[in-house]
Length: 132
Image (cartoon, rainbow, N blue to C red):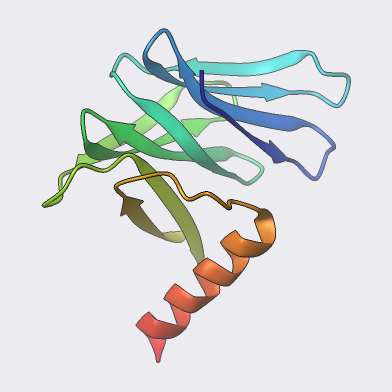
């Protein structure tokens, strides 16, 4: 099982990864009780998540393609999409570009250093390259 944790402003935690071969997303309260769970029917995993007060955007891979999904705070899928590339995508990073827009970047292997600071630098570099 692959799991990534995201700390929330309300002191809760979001965990994403895969369970039984399927992408999952779990939100825990600050008391560490389950508040929301979502499990996709697709094969694959979620390796990144973004959250505001009403929606989660989860990103990962499914069968070598990029997999993106929007899930509401009650665990109901709002939409999902698959994006194919010229290579197998194993992991996806999300960069919030403002006004509800994201840049999703797929990679063929896991990055060995995935800290919040590196993610911020990575996203800022991409945004600078796109908007310069």
